[in-house]
Image 1: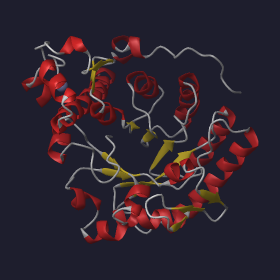
Image 2 (image 1 turned 90 degrees about the vertical axis):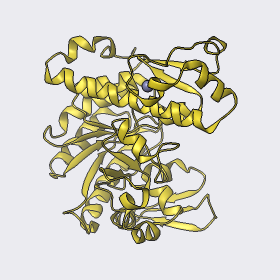
Image 3 (image 1 turned 180 degrees about the vertical axis):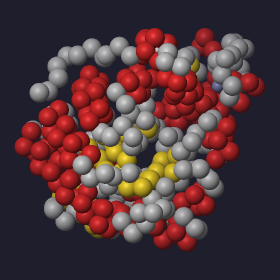
Image 4 (image 1 turned 135 degrees about the vertical axis):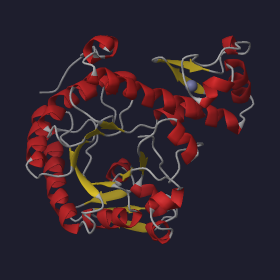
Length: 342
Ligand SMILES: [Zn+2]
């Protein structure tokens, strides 16, 4: 899922997203609550109509963003209180309120409001957050007003403590939710720890339900997670790199600001079907990036989203032909393990 934080995947139109192969787009509850507010989105007929995206959408719960505001919040069993960084007003976000906002936004998949502990955090703190996440999930399920239209996913927490992760996954699996997510990863821990969490947790979630790894989306992370049974990812990398003048090409990164591209009249990737690669050279893209022309960000984001979605499409085809482990062997090696928490 490309990330459409404020009801737009930055620099791309919905038509371009469809051309890139996007099947689903993510919106951020926290950001949309602050601006324009869920009442305006609901007034427009929901998030799909508001942003002109007809395919599936997912909203997160706002938990991840709120828990990133370390200086601005107080946490209690009822929920989280924080000061809006936008206008300074005090906002209470509870499991019920998050679900109410997501019911108003109207995405097809909505996420439970969870407590995302920081990294590093000691075991007691993470255990308490994981237990609270479970209690909050029960409140989310009870608060959900549109269960026939919106699938509510639960989120596995547990930090880097694999036994906490595993018991959380087992408790959630028993609830027979429409889907499950692994959250609280990519919060500063090293790649081998993220990998250990995914490998230990994903297989415990029901295979017949969608399994979603939150905030992850590089080649190796996705390939390894897919091998462990993950189905769904979101990541800002393709559009963020695009806005920084970089392109994802065949597993590597090209920085278009580098001098070598000034007179390179070949496409970013001759084998890529995207509009950018079919019509423009590296030299032209390099020129646009140097001039900070807005079109550079659109063309690079379009290519990057096409490239990463194409990677998952090729994995899907390889799985269907039973060629995944051989064809993607280079992406399936474990990241180097420095240490793994018990
Ligand atoms: Zn391309």
